[in-house]
Image 1 (tube, rainbow, N blue to C red):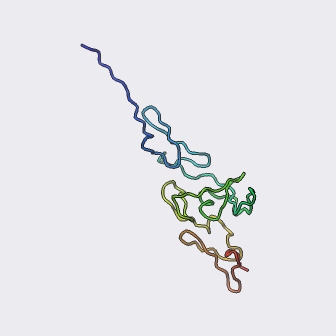
Image 2: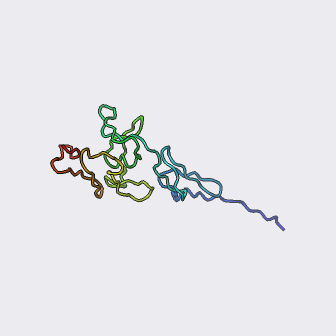
Image 3: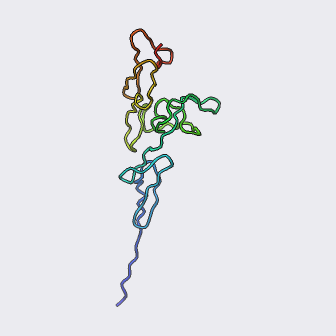
Length: 154
């Protein structure tokens, strides 16, 4: 009678791309998702979500970031809305092709409207910010009008 033998064959779970916004590492009998700096795994362990807040910059001139819009903004929210760059040292924003302007994947998969009025307090100096789908508008109190930027009541 021949001795009974068997071998374990590890299935590479990473071939099905189970990690959203992160890297998949195949382990014996399992896998693990790893996130880039500034993001962390959600409770499912398979989706990397934006977690680090930093400075949101309005524009870049000759390689220098200018006009600090807000000092504590998620990168996804900054880059999906008013920001041209994010962080300190600043890095040019990469547009997320999966979401239209004004929407960000804050929780990983679905594009959600960014409420610019909450994310950028003071975005409408001397006025009132009104969030809209994918954008916002500034309204002025009686006697004041919007300047050329469309954001400051004068």
